[in-house]
Length: 358
Figure 1: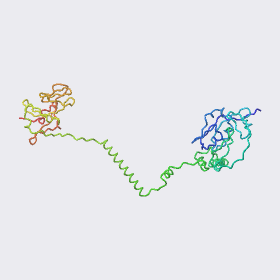
Figure 2 (figure 1 turned 180 degrees about the vertical axis):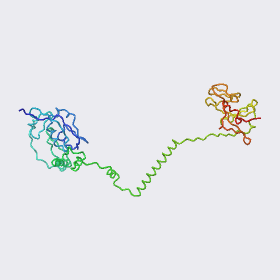
Figure 3 (figure 1 turned 90 degrees about the horizontal axis):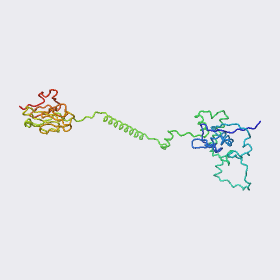
Figure 4 (figure 1 turned 90 degrees about the vertical axis):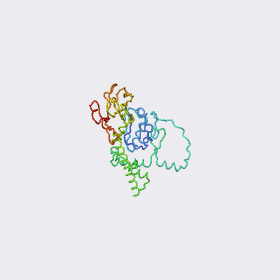
């Protein structure tokens, strides 16, 4: 029967790595331990690259304390190229066993060990890697070694960490010293403030400041709400205007323009009519302000024309000027702009739309 051997064709890392550096020390060609997890190096994605590293990968998988290194194997014919390698002698990445040896040298008597290096070596051991060119040292702390022993003891007692829930696995690893839970938020806050306690007076001051800020925010929001949604009330112009005595407007066929800024023309219609009227200065076309040219009103915007009576005779304006109500009180003439009289509605005959000059 032909001899066969197993080779690894694929390797990967399952969730749950505790970043212990064990795999990288056993087989650095395949495993790369980073800050938060361990990854497979890109060249190790090839089955041809993994074949000569099979023994080292198996050693790394067996030495993983949480057993997250997984691999697939394939049986091939022939004798394993690393089977004849002496124990402890590594195989090269190409699968050929290095046989050339340097000539033996006289061994000098060892010097007394340095105390600081002796302390480091006391917590380390030599890796049995068959792939590395030199034996590497496992950078294991006492906590990692304790976690490994705890994991082995758990398997002996029938507890499988691989199939345990994540919280139970982390709790068991923390109990073994391989995992330190992150401090809670309350612990971090206490550490940040130095563990000092707030006095009753300080608490009352902080409470008063908080309520003051809350009240200020509420008042500000209320003022903004009122300013945005509340009605904006504008002061309306005066509606009842005293313009003078009746004798001040005795000149016949005259337009008095001194009250034009207040929107009023006072007009004496004699001798055609014995009336004093108050015309609006607003053009009935689009609201412009016409000018008095001595014989007619002329709008500068669109050319509308009005007689001295306010009747339109040219331009696009659709109707005559409006008249305001006029009356005499205590010998003075008052114009009431709240009452408007329109010719097209037959309102110019209303006694309130003029003052009789007879």
